[in-house]
Length: 210
Image (cartoon, rainbow, N blue to C red):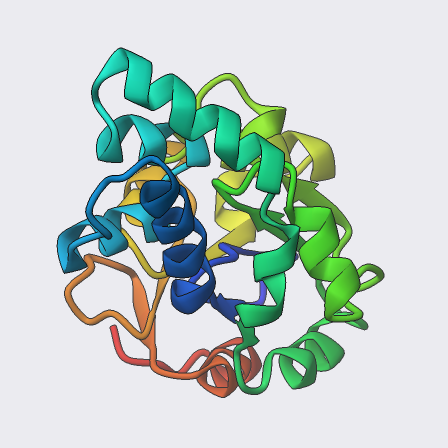
């Protein structure tokens, strides 16, 4: 781990437990247009993908899709941010990282990431943030991670990417960035951690489950 200089995080499922927030948001949209609430499988999809992708997945019909998008733009996501729960030990981990490492975020969120950081007093804890709005292709495409490598002018082996989904794993593989799977033993990863404090231990002494 001596060569690592940047630690990059996914947002949903790593920095925050946002399942309840995302579920409430999309279910309100579906209820408004008279559609059934999300199934467990749809909830999982919504947890990982961009808002545009989620609406296309949930509401395939053109007219209904337009109604759903119109309504979601009207209500916005900001009222649902309060449902997001910050992951235990995130601030402790960032306090440990900041003197030694640069930190970044690569997320399929779009225009809400700044509000999320502000709401939880994290605005000054990240050197660079890349969202789906900042790239032409969201995860699993590696474009976000490649942009971060370019921003810091580092090689791929100098960055860790911490994610919890197959999309994150594929993005890391595409960018040739070492991947740390957070609380998901089903993912193929160089390292697995169960808590963010495990990541602190990994970066301190290189010990974690492979």
